[in-house]
Length: 179
Ligand SMILES: [Zn+2]
Ligand SMILES: [Zn+2]
Image (cartoon, protein in one colour):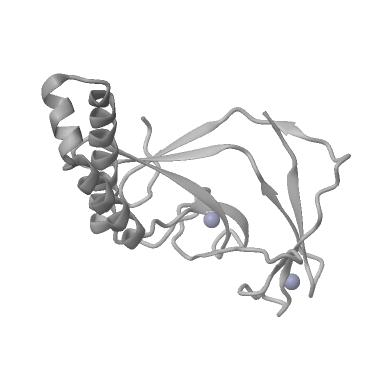
């Protein structure tokens, strides 16, 4: 997989940074050994003083709504009957069970999580998420010079790098662990 990187400049000073779109997966290992998958986002890390990969935060409310919906499906009479008779729907019943367990693990993870999203480079909690609007401007974030960061349009001729998808294992507080 080859990915271009995004060039970021500051509107107020000569700061330059990059967004490395390398494929990155985060896996949290909970106390009981179960795992929760998550994603990285780009953010500003204050201790690193630059753009870094940081932990994406999960939306507990969204997870709860999805969980309720799946639990409703799991209780549907058709599915219960299929479990008994082992029909084609039996596969769907197992899938549902797995999805429900996954969401329950996410909620347990959120309940035990205390620290804020960490920088995946230095582990610091003093981070801010970065989002860029349609003009490429990051207006919520103010750089130390008072300017805003701007994502330059991707140059189609830019050198592209190939990255192997990487997985980072973390404990429930977002600290790196060796798998
Ligand atoms: Zn600046
Ligand atoms: Zn950092």
